[in-house]
Amino acid sequence: MSLLELEKVQKIRIREDGVRLNVLQGISMALPAGSVTVMVGPSGCGKTTLLRLINRLEEPNGGRILLDGREIALLPPLQLRKKVALVPQKNLHV
Image 1 (cartoon, rainbow, N blue to C red):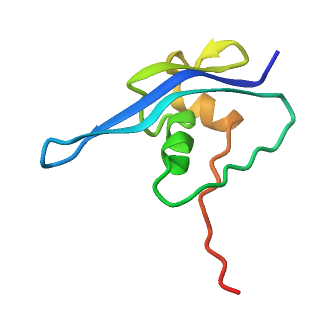
Image 2 (tube, helix red, strand yellow):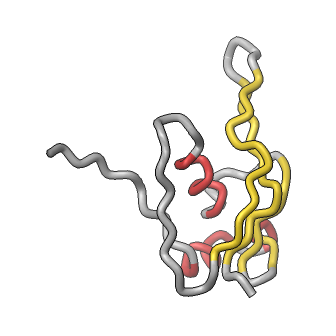
């Protein structure tokens, strides 16, 4: 069983001018236990939003996120955060 699974996860934001932004559209993946996963992509593609959803700093508008087969929405945030680490982006200047 995968440690962390995302099933058709969606995140929508509404801008101040009323425009609807589909930040994440149907993201599905399975991350095996004991693995390290790195997300790489251009600015604004949803990397930080996805990390915030996994750590329940935000809630998805659709889909499910599971940890060891349990929906993370049912876990107390502190219990979840003891098992899943959030590592923010760090810009390196070379």
